[in-house]
Image (cartoon, rainbow, N blue to C red; front, side, top):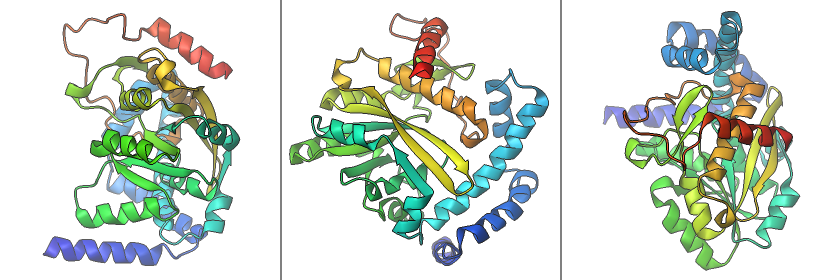
Length: 316
């Protein structure tokens, strides 16, 4: 009962604070940043370990700068997401600009789905506002939160501009149902999370790590013949994001197995290296290791293969 009351109070406070102008919220973010980093020490060990191991080519001073900038951005991300409660459609359109929608909409005229590869990079929550930029039906996969009150709150945030939430556990069933309805749908997949050990089908070289790759986006895409795009996101200024859609495949079912996932991971790494502080370093991304004795097979990426894909991604 006490937990329920506290959660209700926290959500009510969040709704109230979200009405503040974003400039005021950014001032609060600036004040909160040293508290989050130094006093609370939020996941600081994970953040530092991830940055140090993923970016060894940087000097120690440069890596600490990435860490400082990460915490500043992370606090900004928190207040930006909070602001979704109250942000108007006009303000949202100004703050998230989109490039390449013409190609996405053209693909939707000939394919039943367009799948968008996303990462935990920049503010992925704001991308749920895509229905403000297109007449296409939009949806995104999500992992339900444990607490029902907070889960309902975040579901509301992610759907308030017209997008549909699809639970990860229900993804294939719902996507097949959408295909039966006959209306093309644009679906976003945040695919840089760490898969469960028993669900790992592919390992790739990613940021100097032998990394378990999430292949669900590709597997579902192949089943339904989706066109596939990569979401290249940048942050030109505080409170401004730019989303650029980059074509990856006209038909996922025509692409060799695991090629799309490898391509995605290569493009994501390139984007992270461009502005490394904008990735979610607090996620324990490399908690799984390739099982001892599990040899690399022809279906798995090698460093040489990965470098070829990365080079191709850089040219596109």
